[in-house]
Length: 524
Image (tube, rainbow, N blue to C red; front, side, top):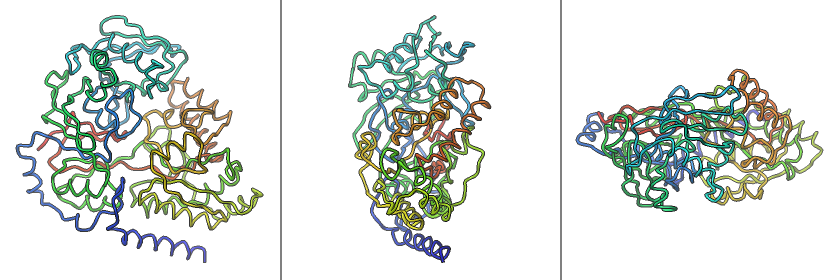
């Protein structure tokens, strides 16, 4: 009877998805109307590229911040790829490759990094990029009065020494194996010292980097206009201009892509995967991403002070059903903080949901009438997933209430500990340290679960000091096993990253960090 109930439940959810196909808008857009799926022919889509000099990109939100050293939102990083260069980049194989730093050397004790810098680079305002500029950027991020979100990523820097015009030495207070990977994101993005000194706080409204495109204009909630930087140090981009437009409603994003108003989307709704695959005017790229999604359990409040209850939830949830029904195969079940694309991905397989074992754990907990409230973002996919989990947990004797909370409020409540459980994930980082340390180390900045385990702290600390990847992998494998058993955070799924574009858009480099890199893109 239980199997029949689950089958009926999944069937009901499938019908619910169809019935909701004309529902209201959402950030992830689970509800595009069928009328938006009319295909364009290849001939008509190709003709749209004739005489085009602007790449129009649709983002899932309006970037809050154009200063990389102040940024704390993932969507900001999409625009940064055009405005700024990083000291180091990653390629499609997630390997480090030179950008503004052409070479680097690490001392035997792991404390000193000597970077050789690219010569002949200027910022968009004409300021020379050199070792002094690098020193300025790191000191800016470390300035306590500036209060940069980057400070926690570079706070092990003890001093930055200029060895020559194009050579800089960075000395750490202790070994930190992920340091180079940190420089592939916002901490490695270089801003113009001249512009910062002249503009102060207004730099975010008039950003100046060394990237392939320079800033022209921004209209909040409407567009960000960029134009090709004619003094760019590498080969100049083929496309003259980039225009970035925010579309929180995924239905509108997809409609504008199909109609030709947009050339490229950074994110699509999972229910649109098949529709876009079948559209001859669209190229749809797919890649495993680096992030993870799940549930923060507050281990300092009941019932999550009880490990048995956390374990019961972990075992009761059918992740395969969620990825199939809610995400249409656009996600894979998760067992840890490390996605399949990461070298730290654990070796143990996703266990099947085990209702009987979960029931036994609830009974062993000694608690009766177990209940809690899950806070979720008000999006159709989030609500559907929560309702599925609600039904799964009810089978093992756990009552889960669902509360929809605006995203900003949710973050505030996470920070203050005003929650029992919150459905929130992480966009992911190249080095596994960036996916684990800040969330599971005792008193770390994003340890919203209030989890503390000396063995976990020891593994995370040691993994930061070891440079051999195989040795680090063994430590992260142990970490994954412990976190699965302790279950302070319920890992649910890893999203796949989809980039949709008109088929005349060529040269896009699809990297697992999910960023839109415009430098290599051209029209055909």
